[in-house]
Amino acid sequence: MSFQHFIFDCDGVLVDSEPLSMRVDVAILAENGIRMSEHAAHARFVGKTFAAMIEEIEREHGVRFPADASAQKDRRLLELYERELKPVAGISEALAALPRAVHSVASNSPEERVATALRVAGLEPWFGRITTFEHVANGKPAPDVFIESARRAGFRPEDCLVVEDSVTGVTAAARAGCAVLGFTGTHPDPQAHAARLAAAGAQKTFTDMRDLPILAKTFL
Image (tube, rainbow, N blue to C red):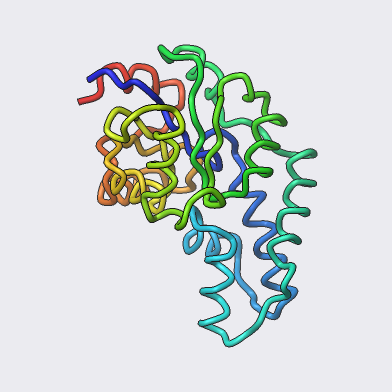
């Protein structure tokens, strides 16, 4: 099958940002009396919005986070991005080898954070559109972000191939009617995570981003 458009998640797919994000999340949780390891935070919340994480923690522990908690997260993480953010290994080579030069990003992160990530990682030239949870009624795992991303690019969801690394994101893309490749290269346990992504709706999984062009070309 030949896909007319490629839609990428950002965190964990284009940039290796999840460890940085979890570092900030764990620090904010600790400042509000909730002790959690980065490993546990990653297992529970990767792919979700920060607001969804806060809501879940507040219900579970009966605590109330400051009204500016999301703004704190954004500020701290953007500072880390400028100092430490790196692109996912092999992503530049993969993008250069794909048949269409301009792709889309669909993310549960704020647009400013995605735009900063693309700039710092040197990936801006490959992406013409950024769609985030801010542009739709519901973030992932609802399908809204991918449906809107496809619409903005001028394609039907079923004409798009999505690259995602989280169960939340794969679920959203599958619900939207997109084909989905599950990327496991930034996960601490790729083999186990591949099974979870497949169960969520990924037709194929892979660990090396350099394999993406061949997978996309031979997708069944």
